[in-house]
Image (tube, rainbow, N blue to C red; front, side):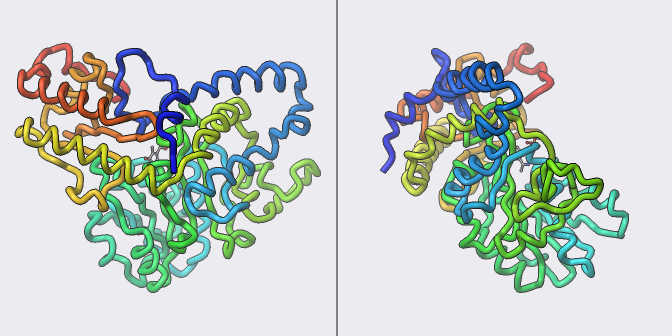
Length: 397
Ligand SMILES: *Cc1c(COP(=O)(O)O)cnc(C)c1O
């Protein structure tokens, strides 16, 4: 069971805001403010450099990794935090390609987040061994897993449409073809139950500032399946992934297991905020969260669709095939989102025409969902989006 009244009270929400963008940046956990102040004052301020030992800073990427492990079905001791998700994608992909030296194809899909594809492109160029990044439509992925494929690099939940890949089926298929499976959990961790170990994933990566609410720029995570942990190739061989960082040896030796996926100095202040966010997750049962997320998103679709015939549902209609977001298509989607934000309803826009709404039961209830649907209906019915001030694009959408 999960007490959603308690989880809601654990977040700061600005007055008058209905927040449907926790899929992009989670809100501030109330306790994060004090946790960060404590880390600054009592640890950094008072302990200075001794905080690495006395406050346990050095162990935090592993400690927090274990707390995330529970949420993604990973074995304890096989998740570590650090860097950003783009970096973790690069590391996982480099390690996976190293496991299939005789193959050249990286398979991904057009629903993947561009940064994952960009990082793959960059790695292909850096390796300069003739690898190919093959991008097919999400529907074509299963059929495209051939014996040429070295690695499948897939994001479980499509950031635009919310379409959910079948992680177990595709991983099984990848393994049957002799490929290595990497899963990006950016829109899965904290959004729905995930079982990386059960699915047989070889590597998984994700970020902590979306559904996990760790704060802007919070560190990313990486999971390496235990069966690969001692052999995984560390492409970014920084000193904190060394077997003995404080021996300051002239040459790199990979650290034990998941430690080798660390790179450099961990973001201690950011981890303080993330720790407070993960405290909230301690009381959350993922199946209960999922049921509630489906209830909220189904309610939103049921209210919006009949009232807004100009919007086309971009997400799968079957909630079992969606993550925790609902998207609609509309050519003037950017202006619609701006008009909604002016009314205190925050969703976001993803080019070219996607209006995206995240449903996060930890701090959203049925009243907010109904009110958001009403605002959207008013904006659409009254063409309130059709004003010059709503069409001017900001740098960050
Ligand atoms: C949000 C997101 C990213 C962002 O990467 P950062 O390095 O954290 O900026 C990458 N990949 C996917 C699939 C995402 O959804």
